[in-house]
Length: 380
Image (tube, rainbow, N blue to C red):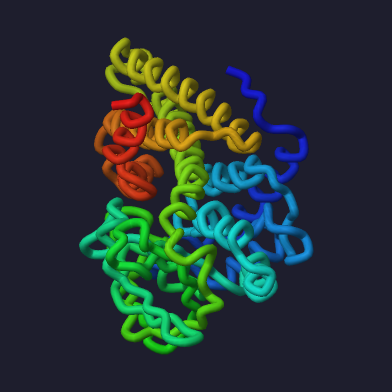
């Protein structure tokens, strides 16, 4: 089905992204997977190429394009080339709005130029060993002491956590108010009392660094508060639809890639004297997957258009996130099965795609939490 989301300018940007990733990422990704982290220099090269901060104002070195389609194109091309270690999506789609929409003029001057140049890698720290989706369960505290906040606590599963120069930390500033006593505080590399734990070993996304963070009487200037004190819950809720839309973009792009690879395999791999795609069962499986992926793409494109128009609801973002990521896992599983024994070999892209897909239904809000949001939207 022909889609009509992108315009010529977006396709020009796609060509730029594709060329950059082919030249600066794909040749090195196997090395990065072994190391468990990407080369820091690729961030600076991405900044120079204009792949960071596309919707940040030009005065800070950004692209000045308030059009999420550019963000979506970059995510799609990262998925298409299979370089799962790059944390550009989290940097551009998750952290950027906290700085551009909630940052003070001083904060923007201090952080955004380095954000766009790649000299500053960012992360957001929500999850804790005892608190994931439940923000009321966050135990990390930020206590005001004169002109500083003093942070104590631990965060885990933090994407870009090892390389991050600035981490947006979700912390309790009014512990007696539950989720309504949460604030966002930016902690910069080198802050006294801020340390990083081990690099976490994951079953997929091997090249993407994921770390534990520790705050032990960590002192940061009070001017590092992002937004309004005790309004962190509302700030997070306002930006989560964009994060979930970005995850859905990656999910659909991954499903399309896995399906394309499997269609080619089904046309060329033979069993019992004919291509395996000629067997009715396999043909029906691929027909089902192709139909569902087309439906996912159509709904995703609608959601991107709604987001650009300022109309994407929390409920629709939740629908897109859970359905596309569950579909991504279904496509990966069915396609791996169709590859037979070769599908279990890591040298085949479908194997890595299967491993990398699994986390999609977990981070950014689990499928179960997404269904809760949708259910509440039904008045239940």
